[in-house]
Each structure stands twice: as structure tokens, then as C-alpha cells.
Amino acid sequence: MVIFNRPVLPQDFRCLSKAVMSWYRHFGVSVSEHDSQILCSAAIQLFNEGKTDVDDLAAGLIEMFPAPDLLKINAPTSQSIH
Image (cartoon, helix red, strand yellow):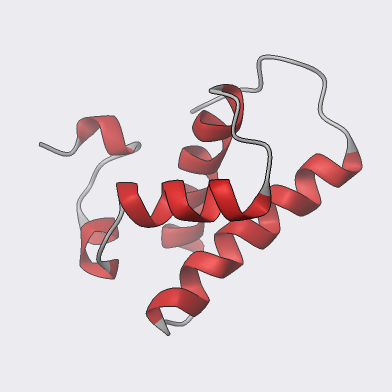
């Protein structure tokens, strides 16, 4: 599980949520709880690395998971995917 490195404001949560939803729209796939858990953890990781803009976060998620099938791997974070 990824945790935030700094206090998080409500607008930060909206930004993270919009970025995750952008990933779903980019690939035209339905939202699922399993995929959302992985994407949210990855988005928090990117946020902690300094990406705080919706577009930057969404681009980072698409780069980390360039195909929806990559979320089906039993990996808690993208760091586990080899």
C-alpha cells in the first residue's frame, strides 16, 4: 500500500480521481474495484514523486500501465511488474 508523503487536500483527491478516470477513458474500459486499487496506488506514487496535475498523473498512469491487461497481473504496484 502506498501512503502520502504530505498532507492531502480535497482538491488533491479530486485530481487523483480524475487522473484514474482519465486512464479508464483512454482505454475505453469499465471501472473495476481491482483495477482501481492498483491505479489509485500508482497515482499516489506519482503524486508523491511530484506529479500533481491531472494530465501529468494520467500520462504517468498510461505510461505505467499501457494496456488494461497489465492490471490483471497479481501485483500490488507497478514496481512488481517485470
